[in-house]
Image (cartoon, rainbow, N blue to C red; front, top):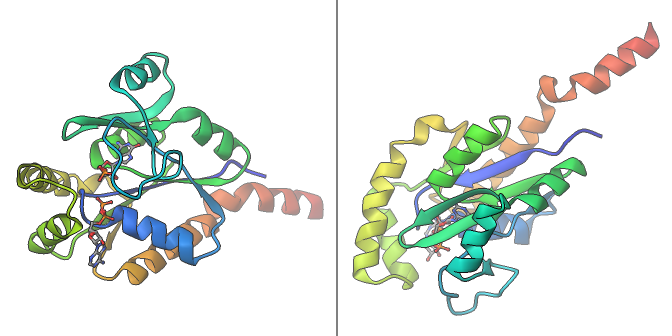
Length: 204
Ligand code: ADP
Ligand code: 5GP
């Protein structure tokens, strides 16, 4: 059994990463596990500790940065967000895939540390629709919406660092495309060479 694949879903805030990720986990039997992130932002209505995020103080988060306990982290519109390293490593070592849903700066850090990961950029149909979605979510002040939109334009410029781009026009279609990408990655010859080399050796 080989090491699992690290799957990174990223893209601008409000594009629908959380919605598409939940859809994938709620509607399909997946062979991968979701890495729950840590954040210093306040809990939104309906969010559950240890399910949506690990909600922590800035002090606790900074301690974890110091001790090297995060695979990546980013400060995003005033709060920290990060990926606990231990869970990712243990799950990959056990041969299972790990799915990260993170913003763009963090995804680029993962790309530097683990270039073998699969990077998928979720894109909005257009910027007007992105603003509608952030506004429609009803969780951000108008000042925060402006900040998130400004950031989104910078983030779109980084699309070149990704392996795949999936437009989120329809949640189910985007989810299906992401599942197809993951399935194709598993079929790559380079990932299966070990097993076939063994068969050939046995036949010789
Ligand atoms: P992100 O996790 O990228 O910040 P969310 O998943 O919170 O984004 O989605 C932002 C808003 O857009 C939510 O209100 C969500 O219901 C809506 N949304 C997500 N995907 C779509 C879609 N394909 N079409 C229309 N609205 C969507
Ligand atoms: P939100 O406040 O809307 O839940 O998240 C804000 C942004 O942070 C989203 O783009 C979300 O994908 C991203 N995010 C969530 N978890 C992490 C993480 O562990 N690391 C990084 N870098 N970004 C994250």
